[in-house]
Image (cartoon, rainbow, N blue to C red; front, side, top):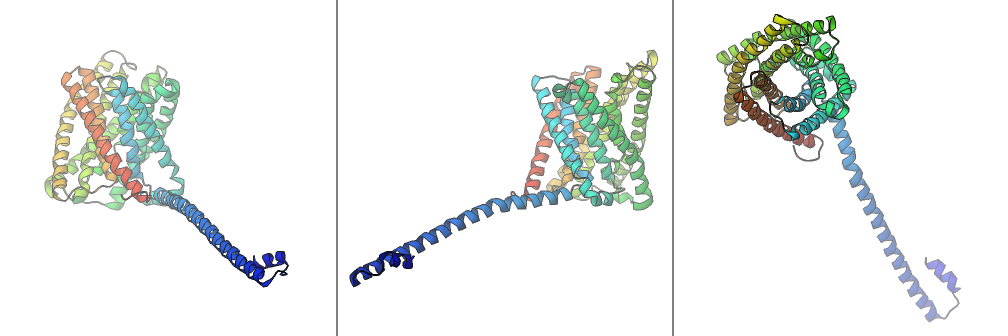
Length: 410
């Protein structure tokens, strides 16, 4: 900068002028230095700002990839717990305009969750192989069929009944196939490989046995849409077979869990959510027996249809009594753990949600079949409780995921 200034003046002026020029050159140089420093500062600030913007996004992407790599079968309980909100809202014995809209929102949320979790499976095969033979493998088939039921009941308001039935049938078929595999493979693995003892008995042991019952419940809604004749009859008989396939081993397993409670106590606080799992097959079987009885009216004639409807009602009332007993026991034991050491939050908290949802649907079906005002009121109370349990569990889950992604502390 100095040299350019001197050249411009040809260095031909008197000494004073030279000194003035020198002073002016020094000033210009200083100004240039300040300008350069300012420019460097602005550039540094912009660079830092860009880094500040990019770094969290990069960290978030890494966090998402790490989180996806941790997805395991038990995570599909979030789909079950959300989807059952839609099913319960549609089956409530009291109707309000807001319920259909709420059911649609819950159905969309469950479908999005299901799609997101299914998308992680191809890149996460090692973790899934590591869970081979574990009871939690029963959860994904139930998630598929829960969304199937929610689609048939709530999705029809958005995509139309025909499209909803096609989607529901596809999800139900995939879920049923997986349910049959899991119902055989997991108990076989537990017997031949894991060899558990009585002290280890947990409500989670029923997880691989419940999916066929969920299939029977969801399939009952599809019976009337199958062409009349042998196809419809065969489907109904198949669903009743699924009902029995799930019911009897589940009752045997519940007996083992009851024995463990009596002989070994409630166990550690981490097992508290597993106690609620037992409500799932109880409430689901009440719903299935009632819906299958109703489906029989479209399939068989005369005494057979009447007998199946009567069976659904008689079975439902008897098992509902036991379900209420188990609900009370689960509440007492959960409060016992909460008052002592607390119940640490894990993904198992979703075990509080879906089982309560099945009790809502079972109670609703009994209220509709009997016309009982008491059962109608009970269904509404249980539905409100379901909303509260889902809200708490979803909030804690959201906080945990946000903490895992580094968005805030879990």
